[in-house]
Image 1: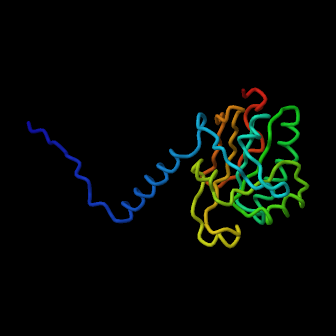
Image 2 (image 1 turned 90 degrees about the horizontal axis):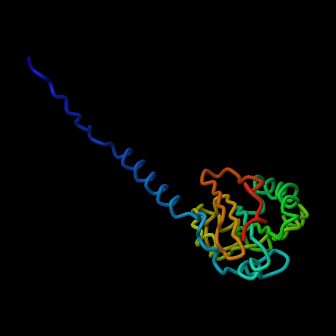
Image 3 (image 1 turned 135 degrees about the vertical axis):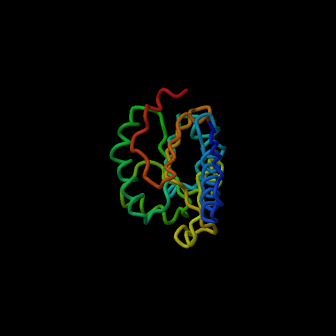
Length: 194
């Protein structure tokens, strides 16, 4: 009696398979570097559309910070999300000392229009130099976005919600790397954050 041993010999990989594998590794590497609970909130000034510079390190001393990242003011999905934050998230945060800050890489002059159009009562701030977006690894290259943003870089943020406590520690991070918009409510009240 003879026993046949079958050895699996991998077929030659196609260049398309190699490219797909490389893209998957790139996506995984990017995903693993994105903001997560336990990361630190950088001491980052942002340019609020109406108020000018606001300093996150000073703001967090008076309460937790809820950051919502969006792309730019003329994006219809972003408009819908920002209006929903006003109607749903602002009332949910009303009994807390939390600060809601919407962040975009777009210049503040273009963000002021969306703030007024939707009568937003929370901060709408520009991260024109992408310092916060880069620190949280939320950016992706979008050719031609610089014209829309009014800046020098063509980098947009993935939609995300990040909550940092008074000590500047990230307690919650929800990044939608698929481009889907973030939930209108974080999972728990930031009031409990130290």
